[in-house]
Amino acid sequence: MNPKTTALTVFLLAYILFILLPQRRTIVALAGSLFLVLSQAVSLKEAFLSVNWNVMGIFVGTLVLADVFMQSRVPAYIAEVVVDRAKNTAWAILFICILSGFISAFVENVATVLIVAPIALALAKKLKINPTNMMIAIAISSNLQGTATLIGDPPAMLMGGFAKMNFGDFFFYQGKPSIFFAVELGALASFFVLYFIFRDYKAKAKLIPVEKIKSWVPTILLISLIILLALSSFFDKEFSSLAGQICMVFGIIALIWEKLVNKSSIAAGIKKLDWDTTFFLMGIFIIVGGITVTGWTQVLAEYLASLVGSNILLGYTAIVFLSVVLSAFIDNVPFLAAMLPVAMIMSAKLQVSPSLFLFGLLIGSSLGGNITPIGASANIVACALLKKEGYPVKFTHFMKIGIPFTLVAVIAAYLFIWLVWR
Image (tube, rainbow, N blue to C red; front, side):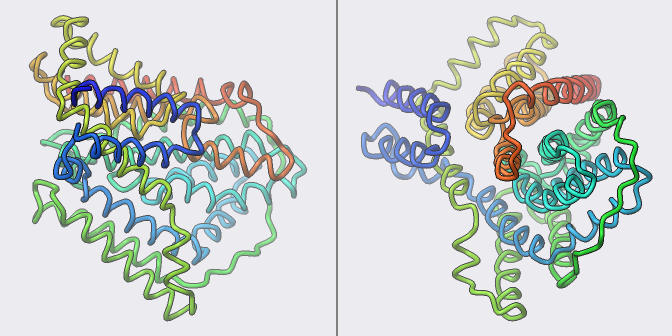
């Protein structure tokens, strides 16, 4: 079997197994990448260079700091204050969703759901209401806003790393409003969907305060990290390694602080991190690198370009909504990683700014995961927490909320990106 055939076979088989065996996705990704190297379809050097180590540094470092931030109880305390000041339950739920989105712009989505879930469940128990819709709303709000910044979620990190975009580029890129504003417009539009869902919750919400802030230091560290990431763009214009190094340094500082102040074990802190996703990302980088170095992305890009001809709007629309549909059922990280080079080649063939297709691809693949309970890790975690509380979530129930929320958010962001970057 020649390298080109091997790379495609491993890629397709891996994606099929990601769907059939979602709990074994990391093993599948690592096994596939190892086979590519052992079969010499990809050299060891090519495999190493396929991994975006800057993105890996951002992911791991931010993950460490996010965990310490969560343990400080600051997010949970803020959530309590927000709920107690809301005029009724509907607005309390909506404020919790807004808070989830805000936290998720700087903290990984799964961590955000774990931070906010206890407050939502406590509110539901106190008011004797079913928490299912509330938890679904928290998860999809988290997924939406995780796309807004470079450090919000792995897909944003992947796209940023591929396009060499720094933290500030997510706000303004090449002198134009960037992905952040597209996401916020989508969030504003989808807010009305959530309001419609919770409009009948008229009772006044009031929680008995139970959260006590352990320390403000992790919050200060997180704010400092955001500022330094923004400033790093002046020193690392190619987005090569500085952002990842900064995040790793802050992760180490957070671990040392946790050890010195709370007497926590550094080894235990490292062990409980999301290593599953970390190694999954590395495996995906290599598998996608395999189809890139063997020329398959070029073939796919030329095929899609031939389908849309010279119609840029058709090409952009196809990229966005194909991403939405596929990401509802398959993991958006491997899908995005595979499609990024395709989007670049298509944009070159159609002679349009790469940002149009790249931003559209990110919006479609990130928000498409909100359609189903298996489309994003945050959704899976939210449904698991609900099942533990005695509220199993039906696939169709999730989609009744996920579909209108996603379509409204995607269409708003889709139009914004087209008007600004066409």
